[in-house]
Image (cartoon, rainbow, N blue to C red; front, side, top):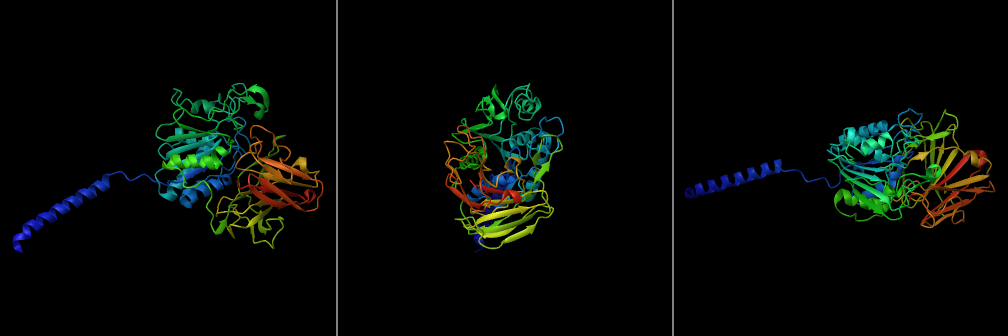
Length: 464
């Protein structure tokens, strides 16, 4: 045996050397890129984080962990009339980007990731661009996806609201579209994609009709959301919000992030469903003629009740299954149900109408079921009862969509042509409670009317 020891020792030494080389290579070699990086979703002007609910469901249905999907909720979500002048209940472009920066840092800390993906709708894209260009985001973002962002303005006219954020000739967009003073429209080091409609985006139109200036050229075209240097995706027929919240936009985003199309663009159901979200309200503007403004501040002290309803009649199937007085964080849940339950959410708070929000069944759990207490609109106060059909994640378009409200198809108030409205109302001639049915492209919601005189607001809200 001794005569073989030198050979054995040689083999052991060779094996050890090879193992050391392998370990060194593993230590110095770059790690494989994350296939499911954290995604931070950024809503648009006047909106809430809740609009990303179905997009988050689609990412989850393709294997994304819930803890790596985060939607921000800007406390004051609307842009100022003039970006350089403070305005009650509104944010500047810089404030928007600063809020996003803080949220990204929270996500990076929570996940341990080095970079995030940013996916923004409309005005949210301005915050993304500002944050990456000058707010420290360049080294913290791998991909930036801008759906329907008016990157060259909703209008481009130095004489009309000259310092407004949405003016393509104004200071905010002029700076973003000339980074370094050379007409560079993207910040290098980040992968960029834009998603736009081929002509159905209400905020990318050549005529000023949709900004209250019919017949006045906006100097903007359907290609306004595109950016030089980005991958610019065009999807036929989609509207302004569908550039981010629709299934086709999701498919484009998934492919851009992973290099592969999604396994499915539908939502894969779960058996047991846990729901939660935030309750917010409306601010009272002090400026004459300004009326209420949307905010995403927690509405502490509001009471939320949840009822299961009869899917055919909208009637409550029993007592409230959940009741909570909202605390300082605004959270109204959690509430556990199943994926077949149609629901009525009732929000009550001092200074507001009792707000009834009817929803079709939730296919999956969600922390993004956001509820807003509201008031009876001045134009509706003389009606015995009013029911509104709401589509938060898109607009209604005729003749593209099949829409019915209380047996009226299409409902009054939805113009043909460019998709430009996200809600429709029916004014009932009788205050007696009864079923009211809303349908949109296959999704059906049955609610109940409630008397306006008793300070009730009724909404049928589409998942879509």
